Image (tube, rainbow, N blue to C red; front, side):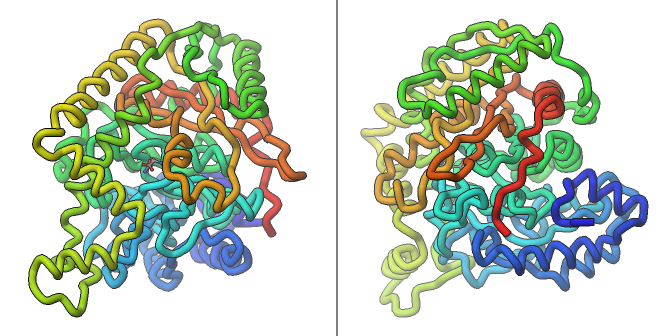
Length: 483
Ligand code: GLN
């Protein structure tokens, strides 16, 4: 049995049938990582011995019993580093588990390995990581996407059965699309953010990277729900997210937002998404045109709100509480200044400065307050669109994976990578990216992602719709050429 190639569900079944033990699964994964991660650079650290000790006590009767799951390096796991892709936190080790980690453990899973990311989740390519970019397993000269690019790359390269990431403006869906796997951003408040290092608190949400839609549902089952440690987590019923899987999509309405099929979208992406829409029609879904008229403002609004929130959230990295501390400061202000100058990379500094500016008195009304008002309009657009359809269908990313280095010096071009994903975070709705084809570029096959956006708290329906496509196509079975 090629253990690392299994999906989470397949491994779970093999463990339950006592065909493999969790320790054997960990060893097989570790060997796979040793063989390919020098090329992919998806992991920042891993602790096999600790994972094996946890495996010994994992409850194998539970839904994720004995399954290792990789964790983006922005989510706290007791005893492990949590660098957030930044030098500023380097010596820090977590002294507690994030709520999602507690819940994964309660479901029998074993956190194993910390994945690479753009510094503090700011970016779309992992090139803002202080530890070097990850590489796309389909073409090692290209980005796996970002910011959770490490999590996407390790699942795609069979270095993990599944992984957790965080999505503030697309950081789960975009890398999932570029790596040819499934990435789910739950509704804002569905999953506790306690123990997730905050980037933009009103947008951040944790979610899974998996090889199949069913695996996403299983992880969401484990991690969702009200948490007294996060006042923004919602006190709502938590259905079994696998319950609608296998049902057909006959009679369901899928909304095609006319503003999402713009000039500049890669022709091969356009063709693949159009073919996926036809496929849904052949499965019995009805396609209706919808309008999201404020789409053009989403990127601008996001970069005001996200930077404003990050400038406040990142104030805590001051060299007093944890992490890096400048050694030769002459006074308190000098200490703050030097610590942050030495610890943060250029993108983080750029955003803290921009965020501080838009929040400063005199500019607050013109930028932050106005952005919040337009955010409400964007949310209202979705509310109206969902009166006409059960889910929205569109591309995840305007292009397949781009070359590393191609955009690193052009932040504005980089910001457009999330043009189709950002509005869902502003509106707080759920979204998923699933594989829907390949682009042929320079003799390489590059995955294309289909994005489905769902009503707030309607993940079960979203997963049903995604699963119907996946189970009647073969895209998700393709594995990248990395050896
Ligand atoms: N690429 C977007 C940004 O740079 C989104 C990142 C994210 O979702 N964490 O902010």
